[in-house]
Image (tube, rainbow, N blue to C red; front, side, top):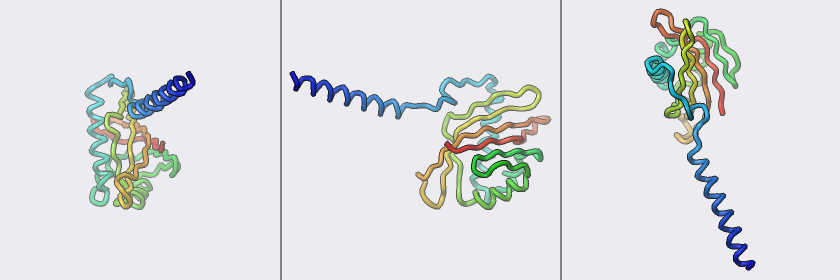
Length: 166
């Protein structure tokens, strides 16, 4: 009888451990779990802009001017480690000093959400991984971001950014 109970207890513990491992592997970020874009065309526009912007970010040694062109002159950049920056030039200088040739950004596939802002633009929310180039591709720093895009006559600019690490 004791042998049966020990085996059942072992089986139960084993099952719980296996289920918890499977749950961890299949976990999705709540930010994107049930998201469906309200405006597919807006979503595709912002995803494309994000791709171009971070293409320039990832190659800012040679594309710093293109990277800079995305920012509004009225930029507000809130960073959990760097604080608030409201100068476009200061953001560009900080990127040149701290990012170019040192860090790249890789978007978590399927993580972007886009929400329209009536008569202004859109809010983009997503999950990036930041890869520290000099150490290892696997040295990832996960984050979360929110970008407020302003649209003036079909000229999209980044007006506000909130960037935090997870």
